[in-house]
Length: 279
Image 1 (cartoon, rainbow, N blue to C red):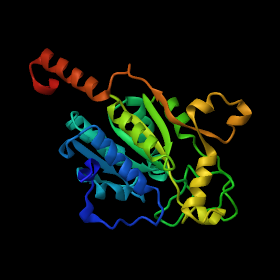
Image 2: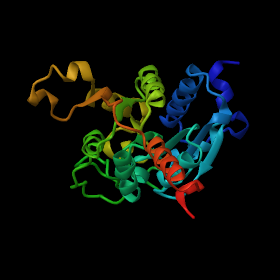
Image 3: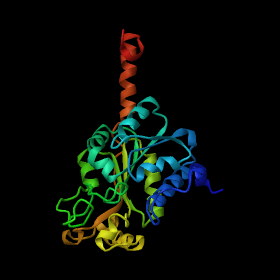
Image 4: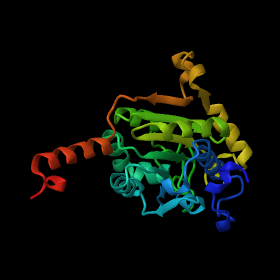
């Protein structure tokens, strides 16, 4: 058995994702990161929301929780405060995390709570038929924009940096080993971390936009992304419509929310002699 296989619940296979979906690559990358860190499955909690990525918690041989749409981070926050010593990982799609769950995302970043988020960005609501998401590129056709999307999309990294996130990275399913590595580093980070994993949905997004196969869509992803090292050397004109991949911010100086919460509780206990600071 390969080291990463003990983190995968193979008895729940076959999985429901479309042939060629990048979610399988991301599942393996996360499991390999667990293996690299030699974590006990009992010390890991994987929380997911609704959508194609929401199914992922089913396939991890760890503690898991499948929650409601957009609320994975709220459940994970409760878990992290109750069991701060555990590795709490949230897997969420771009619609789940940035539409109905967008408010929870920016506040998790602001608080710097030690949750590790894998934000899978395939640019569409894939599970429910291919509706527009906050990450659908402009001028793309979707099930709900048959005359092309006129809305600008979020830049997840810019949004999170503006929200004071302490760790954010971006990688693609085209680069599985660098993807695994940034996930591993995000798990080692003390505060809130987000890895944007750019993936393909060739069935519900690509086929409406002349990319009917996984290969054609991942080729398009490769054309849109560039390593941060090369991106930093580009001119402003060259950077247009390109996205850097790699670790884009890593701040180890901010205090993690669970530690700060524990510190305040302990100071209240010392001041009153009562646990929780209450009479």
